[in-house]
Image (cartoon, rainbow, N blue to C red; front, side, top):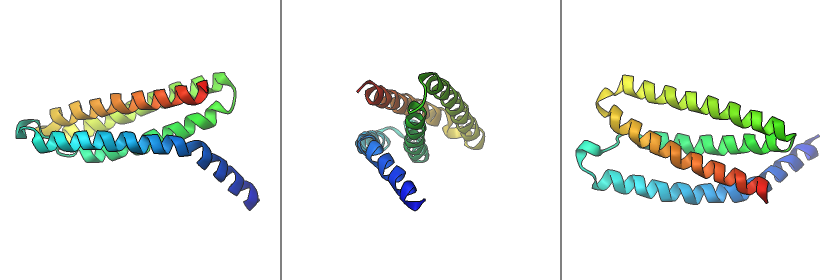
Amino acid sequence: MFRTISYFRDQLIKRMQGFIKKLFLFSIAIGILVFLWNKNTNEKFYVQDIWFAFAFFIISTLLVHLRMLEAGKKRSGLFVRNFMAVTVIKFFVYLLIIIAYCLLKPAGAVNFSAAFLLLYFLFSAFEVSALRKHFKG
């Protein structure tokens, strides 16, 4: 039993290793840009709590990619349904985060929402690109 679990864990690590490395490098690049933006921008455009959103995007991208790889092992129709379902759920969770932030901190709501949306587009593009490469090759 433990041997089987160990085998599946090892296979998962092998498949995810390249993606995790690319996600790490992508996240460092985006993190540097966010840091430089907050360091050099006018106080009016400073994004106060973007680091929490940044960490959230890294984790959610990793989890969604893992879910999509598992769904991709099965029928292609199942993958498409899973992809659509995960995308809709992600969108609503992200929307709830933005709404909650706007209600809790209305002074920084516009800056946070714009930065959050930018992170959403960047990490979504990275995720779709990684999935295309995985299933194409």
